[in-house]
Length: 119
Length: 115
Length: 214
Image (spheres, each protein chain N blue to C red):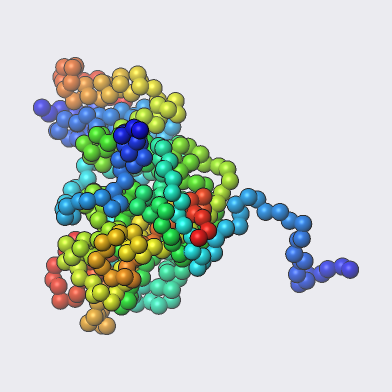
């Protein structure tokens, strides 16, 4: 009998009834990118491209380690990337190249003083 | 016989509703949450499975199973969700609060059995 | 390391800070979706503007109105979403809204044990603690202990109802109107209604409390 079935049976995002410590009344000012990520989620739902439920399932599918170690919107954006690949709206190659381009605007591999007119 | 304005229509007698159109359960029914373990996605928390609950409200209108929605389904047979009540003392063996304390949660029809 | 925008390039989204890995991902996804016309170029900005108008102040106004207007209160309790839509508050998700009334015999609180469902169209974005393990694990198991951590003590003869949002219904708690507010204006009443009282972890503030705690 497999011992790992509990990993499959219980979603890493399900918390009800688990043992836990006191509520830490932490709050943080949402970073602009986090708000943009939330806005993106709303739009994808409204346009019926990725529903809220699909996003939830996408976050669950990240698995225990990522669910624990990534922050809330970090989980969302990775989940969205995966879902958009599955729906063939984006490809991994496109996203990787665009991420490199975006990173380079802020002093990545390319020379920071070589300004390209950004898109 | 002609029917003018103001006469009500006779109810249709040979009318068959779509599957799932009528709720299976009513307010006050005692139901049991099914005990099953879906792989990949679920919206019924583990802690209520197998428990008995009382139907507090029938959520209208009927809707898609949100567990299927998680995989992109946005059409098909619609059924009802039910807002059900479960005493916390039935959920947690060592519950220390009031015996009147309870959970309220929405559960899709396919997860409920008559109790 | 800072990047200096000039007149011919758009200002970096992060100002002088270098974006982290996930911000780069978000920017890349967004730009690709706009390039492919999956979403419109201005839609994110428009949605951010809509989101900015949803703050706890909106919820506070609704609660204050319900306290002074029994007919509004009755309609709100009968059909939360429809009543709020009449006020021009639109819902961008396919959700319903149930307003949960706190009384002398029932105290409501709201949690989402599976994720972070929250009435965002009314209250805006939820606090971190609402989305994290301690609250989500314990609110359904030991609500009185959780409430005590927020400084809220509910007598044993008051029933606690914990609503776990798992489907398309969102919840707004309608806290009890504090004593000694008979002569208050609606605006004064709204100032007593904190976000946390609409989640149900605290009561509305008393009029003599000078600082509104969030």
